[in-house]
Length: 104
Image (cartoon, rainbow, N blue to C red):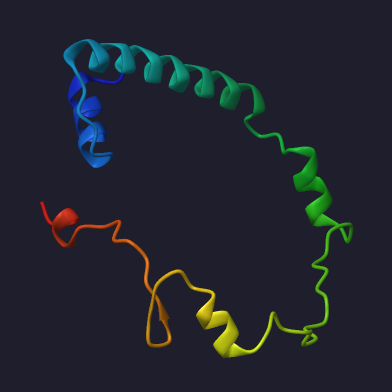
């Protein structure tokens, strides 16, 4: 079973605040999921998925199209003028990240 301490570490990494009841419920749920994955792994251990067999032969190959220039959306200035807010040649968008969000 995954411990409450491991749940707290995961919630800190995900920047989630959990109540003790939520920590307990998540501990049980994640443990059940990991047990199920272990059961599936035990059944499929040593076997390969059907798609893996196809990868061994010549059945799969990369299909790439030619990189051919096509018609653009318009001239540069009309595209820049379509921005709701702009500074020079740059589209201005609202800030979604804090400078200090990564430093803890």
